[in-house]
Length: 399
Image 1: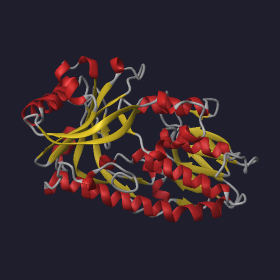
Image 2: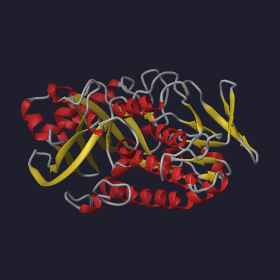
Image 3: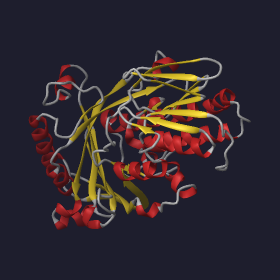
Image 4: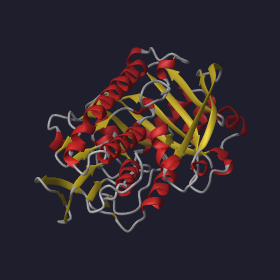
């Protein structure tokens, strides 16, 4: 596939202006589409400082099309290590991984796309289509029509129900506590333990992983952040509902934002970190000013193509983050869609039909793998340090 224009008079709408949506928009524009992106949030997106493990599909825009230098967007570590609760190294192996912060990567993609056709504060609630176009309806009362619509609006996408009414979120039985801490604010001994590795601590029915990511200001080590996810079991029902009730009294369905988690739950998190995790790892959790929560659920639509409409990324298949493949999956969907369109002689409907089967298969294999990884950690206690089957990767462990 090349970046040549093959749809010079066609229009496209991308619903969802996050990393997957922007990647899609850029690739469609390269094919000649006039592209508008509609994002539900009213202001520039904030990734809350969270980190992304970079995989080939994620960075492909920057390696093949962008004039920006990928080296300006990421940090790297040279090892994977497991520390037991005492802090002893129980496994360590050379493994180069690169990372970015969500905000750093989003801003780079947005810089390439521009803001003229990026529309904030538009929540897409539904759509209709005929043989020639798709019309998207927004809660603001606005409508927009195009030859192609791609829904990249995340795990709570209202569009998913149009593609597969039976696809519902299934709670995994555990949540992810997330946070970031300035690396330079940590004790020098803690910095030395953590700065050049992905670090895990595995305990019964739980594990935590952390790694350094770029800060909001620069890639300089002085600005770097330690980013982590701690997976902790919480049974469905009143205990989960209470945990997800924020300081305003609202109950989240997929997350509780930084600064909104009830103080007593943050206090318990810090106490548990000191009691259960390796000292250096616990230092990071305890130092987090505003940890936040992600509800870990699974969902997969049985369809990703519907006439002139496509469903990609978490909107199509949302899975637990153990393979660090969520953004890579969204990017892979986008690149495969662009490839199908580039060889379809302008026939959008047939391109989407050709594109769908392989992406459904990829969604299914990823979902099955991360569910098994989560079950091993949280319920079966068979997450073994150094097991190659537990490596990151979209297409398989380490792939």
